[in-house]
Amino acid sequence: MSEAEAGRPVSSRTKRDEIIAFLVLAVVIWPVLAVGIVGGYGFLIWMSQLVLGPPGPPH
Image (tube, rainbow, N blue to C red; front, side):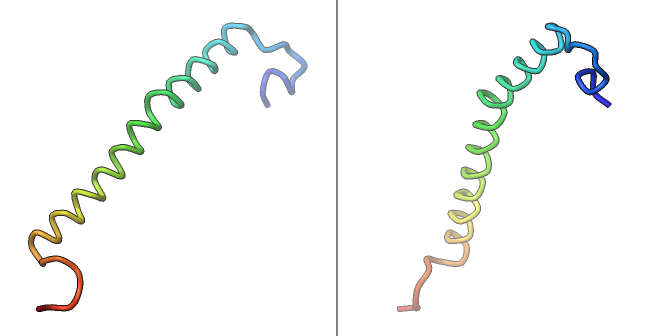
């Protein structure tokens, strides 16, 4: 049961910590993770084409 459900007010310290955690997630972690995933996928495709050749019928 959370503090709010128990009838106790949520401290401003807890709210501040939650806001800081949200901002760190939203501004730092998720963008870095998204760029890493997209970049990793692009690198995987690039390396597979380097080894296997470009997509399409053979000439």
